[in-house]
Length: 194
Image (cartoon, rainbow, N blue to C red; front, side, top):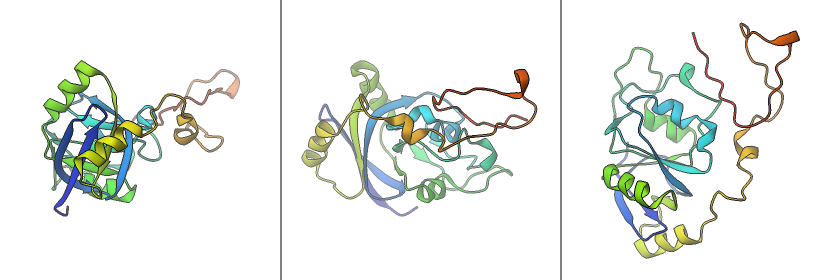
């Protein structure tokens, strides 16, 4: 992970400064949090997080790496990912890549080194807010303005971005009436359970 400065600005004027990891650039979304102690890969690939910048409350994320078999869908759906500390060296025999490499692969900006407890308290009290995450524009006033003027998730067609492009055949072993399982496109998770 390169030592790149990154900032998260909320529409209420709050700005958090830390280190970027994953991709570089700028992205906007609704800032939300997740309290899971494990399962960060499932959070990243959960279609219900489309359009959102997700902050994890657990202080160390990435410690068991990324494994293709643990995804909820074919790709990550978060707009950005915020952690207190991103592990640089996963410790898991199943790990295929680091969290940093995974975010770079899918062009997702990560932010580490901020007080995620303060961010979560703010979101818990004030509710989810529009936010911008950037490694390119580091001017606080500019970022806050972008967060305030960025489109919210209400009214955006996020299902088109998170859903399958066509017919998806679900694996064997499902108990399906008459051999068919109708699905309404609502961001179905594809986690393979063994």
